[in-house]
Image (cartoon, rainbow, N blue to C red):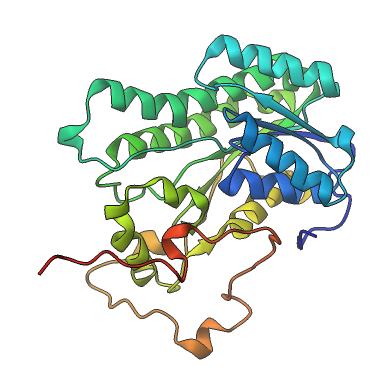
Length: 305
């Protein structure tokens, strides 16, 4: 079972839509919220992945009527309108939205064409806007609710992923604007910004990125990757009653990575310090999967002699 730090049945009677819930962080969030009593609407483009997560939840004891899956492309405005209407027809309400779906590819700015640029913005910004707008217009405007948007560690720039950095910065601004415009309806809007998280999404990058990915913990002040459960816990907190006076905030889950400066030596915690309860990994997700790039059997790429 999922080992959440939040009390049982915290979200009983509530319906939460989670986009990108077929894998990675979204899958983890769906597991945690369902374990806390929420009815979860799984949203994604890959029906097989959604079905697999639905099966996992049912194996964990979540009743069939508390999980639904919905195949949709959040970049398509008509599809998003139909999706939200479908969830409401199925469950009768939408109490919260986790705008988790996203993705990008590695490329320097000079090589990114207009099509690739637009695709990343559509996935990471426009799609999230459409989901938030429709949840608000079709239900939350009259009934209130909470929205958590997913951004990223884009503070200090995102070289090699400038399209994603631009989209994520836009999502932070969208979060702040929506928090103000929709407050009168009893709607809170926040964002979570993961740093280097060991998630299945890392396996989508090309093999030549493997060495860079494996070196990432050495650039984090806390000296390690974060995990999906640590991001999920941040999202769950922002959806919870304890966050009822928090809106327009971006909660960073990044081990202080953006604060690294050339003028201060990077000193990751040693073995003793890393074992302190305040900083050791929170492994709450019982079905967490190690990305293939970090698997013990992985053979690092070597240069030819």
